[in-house]
Length: 231
Image (cartoon, rainbow, N blue to C red; front, top):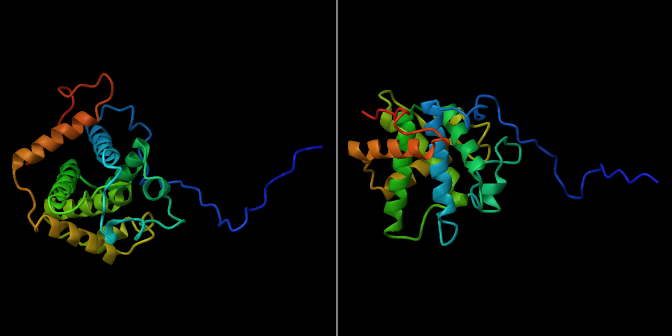
């Protein structure tokens, strides 16, 4: 006899929501094969974030506001996959790439802004670690990166940048929070760094160069890949 057709829903199983990102948030098809300087920087940023998370899998104790176990950024209907960041605690490089590109594209971040976001993220990690357990882990990586990116926009743009307007660009992705939650995440980060944004040009130039280096493809050289001008 033919095998049974197990097509009915599993008990207590909710509706299935395919994780398909909108075109304006998905990574470009050639992101891993292109020598384009901007895509190289995006790859390097994703690699840097993944490396930071992968190197700190234990002992991290983020506050509830920045811990997706307590404040998940995404509901089930979100096109962003949350499982690697909230349950398994072991996101892959491609998960980091999807997150980084989605935020960068939706916020229309310039290369200078991307570099600034990573400077702010690591500065916060260092400052927090002097007085408390490590901050960054899989469950806190997305909130910290999101808040860092919006703070970087506010720091690098001449015009006023409002958290509400930034969040409006991403509310279909981060469906589990509201703009007020994100504003509180930004404020928490600023408190940890005592509201002092790093202002040494050499720091930003170093980060720009190292992020590009981290994104180099096999055969691609740093000498042949323009590094973003920071000032």
